[in-house]
Length: 284
Ligand SMILES: Nc1ncnc2c1ncn2[C@@H]1O[C@H](COP(=O)(O)OP(=O)(O)O)[C@@H](O)[C@H]1O
Ligand SMILES: [Mg+2]
Picture (tube, protein in one colour):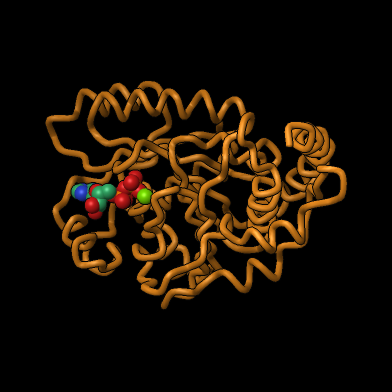
């Protein structure tokens, strides 16, 4: 298994140069759809932001794919999908068939387009939703075939013509370098509180390690007493927007209603605007 993991790394390095080329080609295309990853401490509002952004981009007429990459899966319900979506990491049979090669090696770039179709669901806005499931960490107990498969799914989404929203946990290293390079911006969500800001620093470091180009922050659950913390974050990061604390989101969550059906979307519209400006401006 260990050897198979090393193979994957070598393969990934070779692949990276191709990924680079692709993103350079894409730089000139003004219509290149946005690819966004959302990270942050548990409970800060990543899924809420992911669902509302997906909704807003779909309303603007974009094709949107939203992928739940968090081990606590809740993006489908935030997007109004009630039926269960099979986590792709659980498709052991398909993973073995597509990824495994003889002698413990495996295919780095397995065919996944049919899986992408079959295991995604569309919500009423037409947003395509997939659930990745847990990606195992490397080293002991490394299930590299699963990682290779899930990364192939992410690459497929990154090279598609859809706006892509990845709802991730704080541990974004699972993205892998090759995939991370295709992400235009990593949005770290923070809520007023020291722990959330500490997680932000960790995310920034991880983003640097996998060479994500741009990182920006959304401050969620904001209330006036947290001004000093907001100013501190603004001094160190590019803040895309501030979303006030509102019970409306909790009510939406409690009644399994997508937040965009109940809550004030104006702060999110501002976030979307700044996001497009930030990526378009070429700032890092
Ligand atoms: N601006 C906000 N004000 C108040 N509650 C919020 C806000 N944004 C999200 N929430 C609530 O916080 C909880 C966690 O949000 P969620 O988006 O699931 O976080 P995460 O995906 O980061 O774990 C949910 O109950 C959600 O409704
Ligand atoms: Mg979540």
